[in-house]
Image 1 (cartoon, helix red, strand yellow):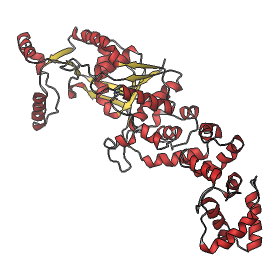
Image 2 (tube, helix red, strand yellow):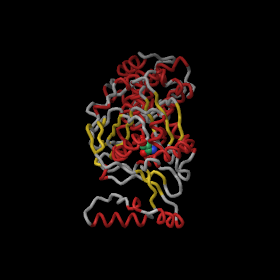
Image 3 (cartoon, protein in one colour):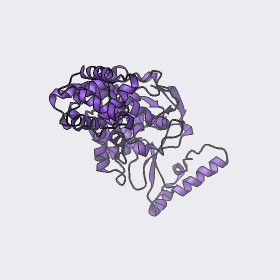
Image 4 (cartoon, helix red, strand yellow):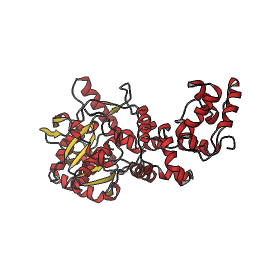
Length: 439
Ligand code: GLU
């Protein structure tokens, strides 16, 4: 059975880059009728915070990316210990004692000699006596001993990949302070939870190579891997510095519609154009991982505003009923109000202003040369309740009485009624205006 996971570390807020990973994994599971696991990578006790974990769940709920179960790495330390023992026995795990400074020096020397900065495995030649002496000074960290062969896989996005294990340092899986590092924990989880497909950012390609060997050493089944490109800003600049401003919770506060965000990310960076989806079933249907490319993908937050507005313009009233209820819009006005409003809002928050205009009216905007014209027009205003033919009837009567036409007729009326020179279709708005100077 298809099982995927989204594995954020609860050390910060989810941003647009994380969402791409979450969405791809979620869609793959849902398309196959499989399982989607939310895995919290919280092995770092200093940086992991419950409030970040809570916010991650709220963000995913807001987007409708429902999970079948939650797993937390901090509750699986016994399992990681057992896995470490399993790797120690056949000698795939070895203890090292270099300090960060020593490692740094080694790397610099290698680079000076134009050699790749790969760990030289000198710890492997330490005698038991030397190890004991070093252990007395500091605690050792543990590395996984890679088999020096080519590691190959068929990547769901990047195609056939092959990495020479000798070009990669043996990964550290347990730190000197005993903390399990992501790689060991992630591999154990993927094996134990029966993960069949892993989609993640292309910054993980080298991890994947080493993880394949660790999975095999643990006797697990290797999942299918796919690595999506990383997002950049509109000019191709790295997003990492700006990701703080692209947190999902902030986008939500700015009024971005979940389906606009998901529709955008379900296509951005693929060979197919962005199509606005009103529901998840259509989004899942139209998703194809193999259409995504390896080139960095440009993301412009401004696109989200435009897509959100467009989504609202076509949205069925049932999806905004809660917002209309919150504004206490009378039931009989709800449908005509939404028909009028939806083409004139960027976000749902704009509904409040339009409803205030309908319920309370506004201070009219009248140019000096229009004072007479407006007072004549007001005498001709059809009485409440007004209908969707009232605007036509009124402007026809005003035209006959004043001889004005075109913009000279319509614009002063619009400004007097709405206080603005642009806005909703007046024939849809007029029947909703409950208070035009008391009428
Ligand atoms: N916690 C890891 C990350 O956010 C998970 C990577 C993975 O998918 O294995 O980078």
